[in-house]
Amino acid sequence: MEYIFSLELIYLVASVTYILGLKMLGHPETARKGNLIAAFGMTLAILGTIFLHQGTVDPLIYSLIGAAIVIGTLIGWGVAKKVDMTKMPELVSLFNGMGGASAAIIGLIEFSHYVGDQLSIATIIAGLVIGSISFSGSMIAWAKLNGTLNKPIRLPSYNILNNIILLAIVSFGIFITCSNSGSQAYLYLIFFGALAYGVLFVMPIGGADMPVVISLLNSFTGLAAAFAGFLYGNMVMLTGGILVGSAGTILTFAMCDAMNRPLASVIFGAFGEGAADLESSQKSQGGSIKKTTPSDAAILMNYANRVIIVPGYGLAVAQAQHVIHELEILLEKKGVEVKYAIHPVAGRMPGHMNVLLAETNVDYDKLVEMEDINSEFQNTDAVLVVGANDVVNPAAHNDPASPIYGMPILDVENAKSIIINKRSMNPGYAGIENELFFNQKTSMLFGDAKDVLTKLVHELKNM
Image 1 (cartoon, rainbow, N blue to C red):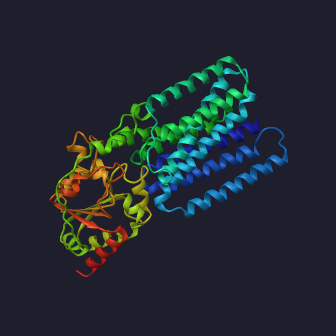
Image 2: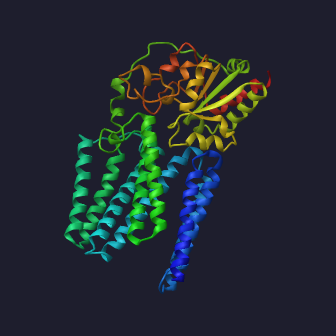
Image 3: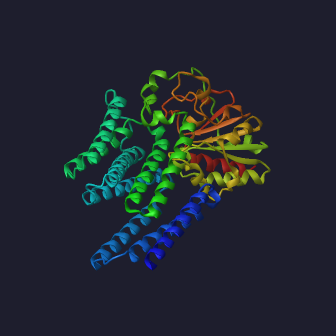
């Protein structure tokens, strides 16, 4: 009784830290502390499970567990410390995939121990399938994000094929559960089938849709962990899995709204299919662009009353977040009001721009979400777009033939003056031309973001 009380108390405390940590992750100012609180709870749960485990355990097992924890901690710590902000989405996909793999391995190991118990076998199969899909899908997402797989690959009628495979996996899982078969061949067949489905599910999806994919796969991993917790009767695993799964699902809905994609299309339909027809739907603007220089841009911003900065993936690639914070401080010293307009899917994962700017200690109150900032553009003297493309493209409002039509965007076009910093006229991840480039109020400031912003700061200091 003392053992049960002690371990259950630890699990209760750990579960509470998960909930508090998740709540604190909802705001950039408290996110770091929330992450540490949840990590403390996880550490507490792991140590409690190891040292308060009921029954005799071979000392060799403790040695193996300790070695695994040390090795995993060193690898995870080293990778997380060295990773660039531009590579953070890849790291998230990689870590998420490892969680799915862990759930799948639990199913492979525990299957033979529960033959004849249909509820437990159903739980094992569900966790195995979902974890395997999450693992292989996350690995493909990782490869797409790092450029190894930089083009969508589509088999003929891939949506129908994917849905048939998914239906076959579900049906086979029901068969294994109901037949009370302890066949390892059946187990590995459904395991490899789920791995294949994860690959086929993510492979056709273009890079522009990766934020939705990452959040969806994250919810899969949480769900797989919850099944493992249910299997073991482990409340802390169940609580953690449910929290991750539900948070990932909520985030997926939010990303779908931001990308103007129904969730049913994400799972069963032509998710990402629009990218296949980008070239055919692309419209040539037939207009001309207006170039500007750092000196002219500095003059415009120096005499502005209000400036809104729109950060995008190009800012992260150039590692220019520190320079843009310096620009913000300099403008405020000159009496200019400065805010950052944050689109939900700017970057390569949800919250990418928030994390990037938080690294430079930008005041969190200056990071304004799309719904709150859009009404302010019409009263803004100058907008500086750095590395963003599709999230400011008016084609989402104006061109029914565009693959991004209906997608909520930042209404940059309503500002009095627009400065867009890009390396070239190449399109964004959606692969379409940006109407904003040809707007009469727009001036293109070409060049690497860090170099251009450094020159812009230099010009402002001399005014």
